[in-house]
Length: 117
Image: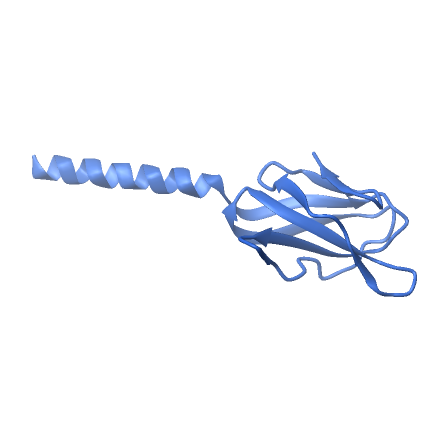
């Protein structure tokens, strides 16, 4: 009887851990498409009032699409924003957007806002 209870407890714990891990993002792969005339210089994610460092180690000129991949261990619903280069060379920070990063295939930036599908 004790072995059966221990086995049941272990099985329940594993099921909970597996369910929790599917609710969290891990290796995220998606594309970012620059549909603007600006140069995108950054992609930042937020959690608990803190912003990540820039996930992009490249710039993305208008009309380009890039594959993005990063490791993130947190909930699928996140906030993000993009930055782009102003005419004077400074960076402009876009509005904060919400996204289901686990469900996103492509993030589009049109020069005003970022959307995804």
